[in-house]
Length: 293
Image (cartoon, rainbow, N blue to C red; front, top):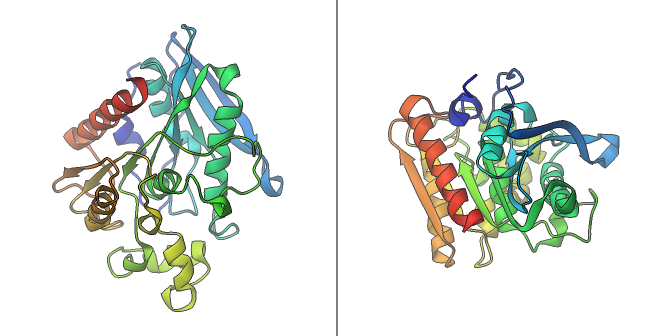
């Protein structure tokens, strides 16, 4: 059975909506698929990941961590199963993770979880034939934000959390960010659901929790040490304004960090047809360049 386009499957979700659950993907003969591996256990939550890797070859293989969207309050890791399998077919170890959601768990719980996942990949590099020096990250929407946050906060201790393997680094080699927000202080009035979702995750609105909006915005953590980044964003996105990607790429470039923006004219929050194919192609080419060469 032919796998669906990863962009079509994963990116057809709203930043502040609930993604449609996906059926388990077919697993080709040349891929090893393992679901439900626990990678961290904060607050007795037993967080798990699904992992795909090449069946043959000694490795070590580059790895990609995939982070689902859903407005920090919804979504499941299964939405990235198909992309993980496609990446494994291309010679990667790929994992998609569950992380803690709002309103029960507010910022920075989800950040702590994504960093724990990167550390887990490094701690288990020998078991899964991972090259610990070549770990990329990607995500769509809220997952794009969390992926980007990993890319700009590798050396910020307050965001590490206590999710295990503290001896390992949570740094990533590169990031592919699909329509993730970069500056929450400018989301209100530009996103159809920001006024509902952001207070749930940040514990208040701009009047009552402005400092947290600033601290949770990747734009404000950009330094010359940030990881090379590819942003893919549609110009008619009503959930995360296109300008959010422009600001981020400009800030990264100003800091001397390699950054590029693929603009999909007329695309909204989620890609279909040729836009999905363009998004997939950009992701694979970027990761091949950054993680395999």
